[in-house]
Image (cartoon, rainbow, N blue to C red; front, side, top):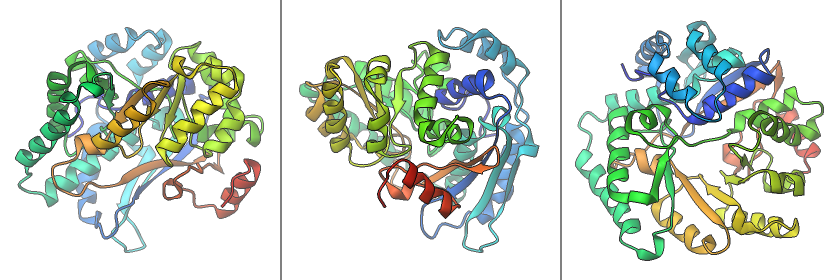
Length: 391
């Protein structure tokens, strides 16, 4: 059994789920799976994936897990009470070979947002682990440890990087559950204060680490269907978040409509209200420069704000970004695939994205076009027009 705890997921799934419970309990959504790698045939693994998803749907939150969540200052008691009754329902997910006969598989999650939001991360972790279990019969753990030690040495051995702070964001694309845990424990032991925690709530609880995360793209995408007016979607999403968390969890996601659209909406009020922003597409150096300039233009000291980088990070890239921005703002890093799936085997670039909410298309238009995922070209064009996005 690959997933043994419903906490084996990212913290932002719970923080978003709490917002859904309190503000959008009736929302209906649809998610779809995509593998971005060329030439990968996932069809032979459909049966094994289905079996693991059945196991996932048998899990319930344990009392000690609920007690742990109740102890997080931003998690409210009624939400934990709801989780005490919660169980994933298999009727909301289908897994089948794609009719396109291209090696792809169709994973479709459709149903109430409140009851489907927790599928994404564990299902991606299941696909990853089954794929590598079946295609890499003798994993090169020695090479993985060698690579990990070299990365750690790059940071721990340089006094100029002593202030760098990184966290694990690698649950969904990890090589395996056991390798993920080994990587976390090694980082905590050898990186010391540089390693600040993990997005994985299960391992945070098990090993006394700090759980990290705020919001993901699906939250702001769903607001396209839930807000009062499409142009005000981003503002509506940020204001609803602020009403829920009252200043906590104050890192805003910046790339659902691209950086230019984000900055138009992220006015002086939001600059002061939120603790910072997260980068997840486009050139990270350009993004950092633009955000710092934006803070300064809105009479906010960038040194009081945090820039979180989380897009396709490597250890050398983190070091370069830290050197560029460390004296001008607070900098933090959330690293995923390069940390939890780097044993010398090509990682899968797989995602599960929300594509509809309340029957209408939703999408993101990030600064990395390959990350966009929407099957309605007319809606994408309309979105570009509304948010004044070129391309």
